[in-house]
Length: 326
Image 1 (tube, rainbow, N blue to C red):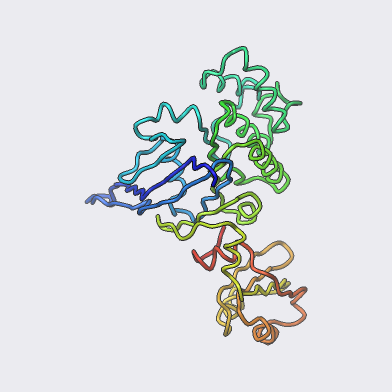
Image 2: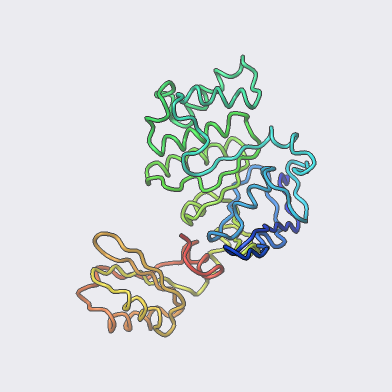
């Protein structure tokens, strides 16, 4: 059995706030309601859920930025509450977006600054920085100011920053948010390469295809509660008997989407609009009965494509959590 590097046992976290403009009243919000899971050495573990589910709170607890109200956490056999100074040298944390970089410094100088913060010996810094810039594909712009970088380049530099102390465990909170498809692909390739080298990774993301590609196991959480923990493959098996009818429509209204969602045997409808057409995905256990009803509702000339497909991880998410994955 793989070595366990993170153990979370019945962790709860409550935020206290005040509501009201004139007569303020105190309010408690349960961000986490008794979460338990474990992460194995060398694993890419996904923590997925809608906005407000408790993902970022959980990351902050694991990275010693918050203290749980109850329950226990173990990181590499250490308590991040009482032994946070011992935990921090062995972990690192990367946010999505373009924070945690100094734009007026070069890529090399950014990494040198963070190397000093992590007390990387000066005689090791140069080689380590050059190796990291090579890893993330920025060696040729090492001495260029970060303010000239694209969003994808900045995010890859953040990955390098997060690796400057050679962490055993890397935490990433929505690292690909806002990236174009090419940059997001480069980022996933870097994460897979890191994992092959032995780095344990905990990842939060709203992109189900990203989690499906990267993660060994996934935890779905919603409203502070753990829904399920399993491999992507096992999760997709939970939708046995469910098919997805995907329609590409050139002319569709909001009322028509509503009518499609009310068709007999349709469990859920998701739609995405681009400049040319609308893609509608209908979950059903009886596709052969639903397809004729679609043709009754929708003008056949508006249907550019229609196919029956197997469920994706996003379809599992919709079934277990509800709503849309993104």
